[in-house]
Image (cartoon, rainbow, N blue to C red; front, side, top):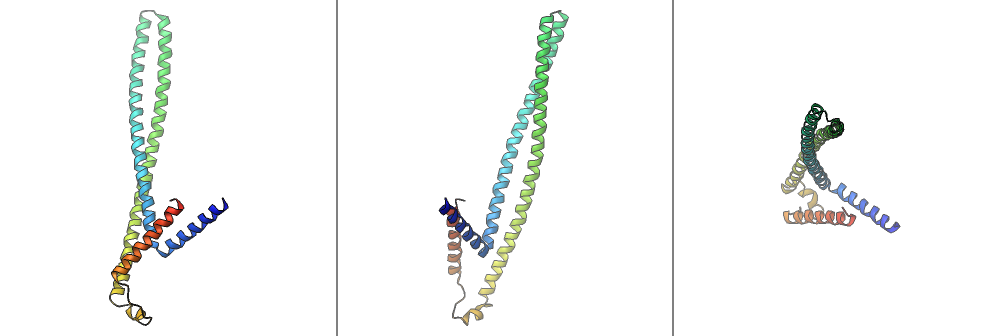
Length: 190
C-alpha cells in the first residue's frame, strides 16, 4: 500500500507541476469538469421533472378514488348499510393519507427542481466565465506567438544561437505536451 501511495503522490506532484507549466490545459480541464457537472444537473432536472409528473398523476388518481369512495359512503348511508359505511370510510381515510404523502413528496420534488435549476444556472455562468478566460488565454498565447514570429524575440535568441520556434516545432511540442498530460491522467486513474 505504501508504494501505491508514494507513486500516487509522485504522479499528483508531476501533474500539478505540468499544469502549472501549462495553465491553459488546466483551464481546459476545469471547463471539462464544469461541462460534466452541467450535464449531470440537466439529467437530474429531467429525472426530477419525470418524478414530478408521476406524483401529479398519482395525486389526481388518488383524488378521483377519494371522490368515488366518498360517493359510495353516501350511497351506503342512504341504504342504511352501516357495515359498508365503516369500511368505505376507512378506505377513504387511507386514500386521504396516501394523497397527503404524495402531496408532501411533490412539494419536496418541486423544491429540488428549483435548487437544481439554480445550480445548473450557476454552473452555466461559471462555465461561460471560464470560456472567456480560455479565450483570453488563447489570445495572449497567439499574441506571444505573433511577437515571436515578427522578430521581437529573434534578437534575444540569436545571441544564444537558437532559431525562433517554427510552426511545425510548436505543433509537435503542443501535441507532445497534451499526450504527456493524458498519460499522467491515465496513470492516475482520472
